[in-house]
Image (cartoon, rainbow, N blue to C red; front, top):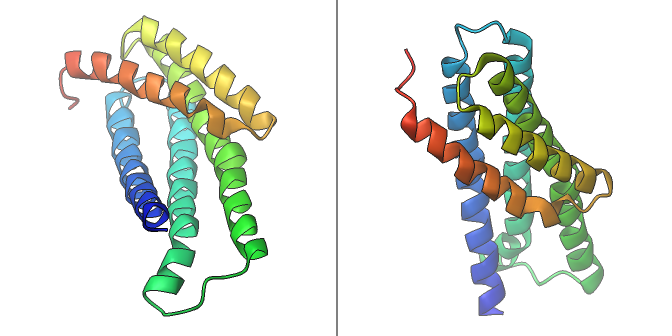
Length: 168
C-alpha cells in the first residue's frame, strides 16, 4: 500500500509540474511568434495548450483525491467499485481528452513553425508525425499509450529552443 501512495503522490506532483510548465512553454511560443502572420494558429495552439494543462491538473486532482480522503480526512478506503471507477475515469481523461488537446497543440505549433520558420523546419515535421500518432490513438481512447511521443516532441523541442535567441 505504501508503494501505491508514493506512486499516486509522484504522479500528482509530476502532473502539476507538467501542467504549469506547459503554460510557460505556450507563453514562450506566443512571444516567439508575436511578429509573425500566424495569429490564428498560434491562438489555437495556446488555447489547446491551456486545455491540455487544465485537464492534466484535473487528472492530478483525481489521482490524489482518494489518498487524501484516507490519509488526511480519516475516511475509510472506498469499495472496489469506487476505486475501479476512479482509475477508469483518470485513464479515460488522459487517454482521450488530455492527449487530444496535446495532439492538437502539437499540430498547431507544427503548422506555425512550418509556415513561419520561427524554429527549425525539421521540428515542424517531427511535430506533425507525433501529433498524427497522438490524435489517432486518442480517437481510439488509448492516447495514454502515446505519452512517449509527447516526450519525444518535448525533447526535440528543447534543441531548437536552446539554439534560438530569447524573444523580444
